[in-house]
Image (tube, rainbow, N blue to C red; front, side, top):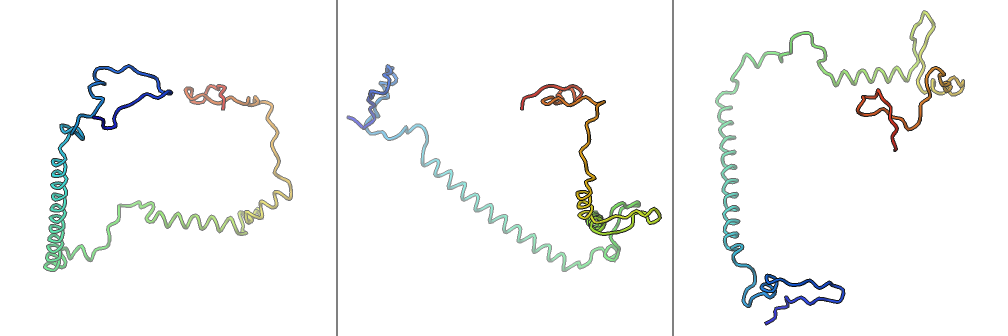
Length: 181
């Protein structure tokens, strides 16, 4: 009786000799669909149902407990509206002096705002010496117009950098080594 599980070797498949175990399990025995000793389907279904039921019961219990605690807190608050009247009128406590930054975000915003205002405005740096500051965009235009920005000539006292040499990792940069990139 054939169930369609036989395998025939094609022309492109190499022939492999079959062992006794291969011959024994070559065909599925009549009347069997899967290995019944592996797992019981009913046991798995029962476990899943118990798990789902336990999850539902736990969630309902947690919901009831949460609502009970909220009711208890509301009753306590209504019975004792102000537990600590001395603390209610007191100012918020501050750490001991020196208080370096009370509001760091606000202070950082103010510093950046002041720097931005200085970078984009005209003003005196030193009135006695006649030194002024100008907006940074105007300063960049003046540098380009006057050509005051020039490339530096290499210093002859320093050795020229050799391309491909990089500080080695193991020497913390004291020794140079050639690396491919």
